[in-house]
Image (cartoon, rainbow, N blue to C red; front, side, top):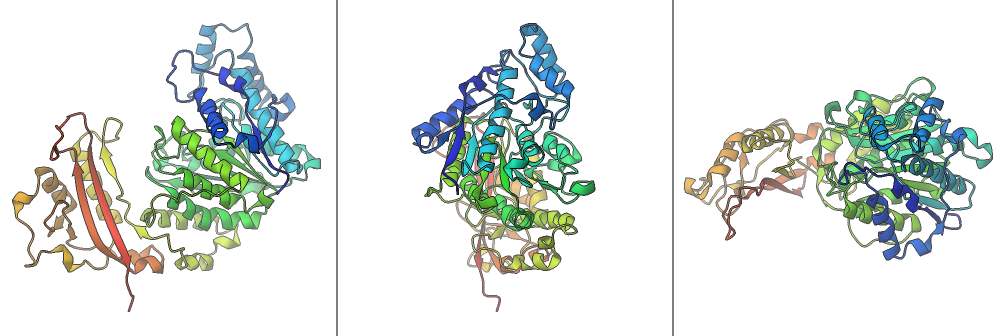
Length: 518
């Protein structure tokens, strides 16, 4: 690594704010909270400060049209009054403007170009840009999704195609924002010198930005075929081990073949646990581990740029965790969800690999068969980690929760044997009065029989579906379901008074153990 880690931050980027809605998620406090956390942790003093600067028209024109550049610059001019800026913002998808928007957007893009250029030239070993507004949704000719200019795309294109002296011929962009970076994908669709990788929620194309562009079969076109990699989560709930599995079995093998000269990270922290928009479960330790993986590439020349993330606590802690990885400092926390990789992650990994197989030898079927050699902490279980019904839930009623849970149980849970421990000493299920009506309804929906008496009912699958051996590694095929427990919270069974506003939470826990295949 070079002489140190560069850090760019400028409070002028806080001048971009939504004057009509102070509670808008993309707010100035996002970067002030991160920077304050870095100062408190002593990280700022360990970094080399890089002065922020505005992007030039030539730099912006590498990926944006002249018309778009002119429109974004004009927003900050005195000629526009408040109402005109509000009206202009409504012409775009999820965009607001104020007098400070132009300056903030120009600083975000230009500062990242400056930081990445210094890393490319070897003046810095790695870098981090605490910038806003974000960029990866911005298209060549349009602002979109809180993004005015595509900061990471501008930096990547300038380094690869506009600065021959930098020595950068290939750039890897890793986008772990919970939303697909539609703008970045489109800008490098036919470019074999920029490998774009995005892991994001897709939800059959209904999750923002709401198109099929983020699906796994979108691999690039023309000379860029194979250089666009999408890992589309089918729903919410994916966490540390799911992301790390995708890194280990999709991103890292391809990246090692690609041999980038620089890695740019579209660091969206709306995939963090606690984010109000994302619904995923990455912990700070998970982000730290992913950043460590990336530091193995391009000689450690990794530049992190802030994208999304709207919970001030989670984005601050997650950004700090990434900074520790860039600085090479240890982090004591373990990744969350030990032994709880979601089973559907494996099928998605294989789906993505199948689309990339024609372009990358590391995605070959022979290599895929080696997934049997999974790290010990990757133990597959069912997707039913936690399903809740609350004010922000997608479900309209408890019945919807039960039906969704039953459908997931039938389609995802696959076991080969069931322990006799689920029955009582006489092989009978407990008396009916030990169940609450809600649990009884849940069991009926799940098509289960035989439960063990106690605080938690332990259902047995009456007719096991197709064995899991069809879709998971051999190591995981040797799993025996040891205990399944259903906990129903919010029924008023504790000393606390039942509050109708308290959400009903149904939690299904599946504990597994390795058994001797003999």
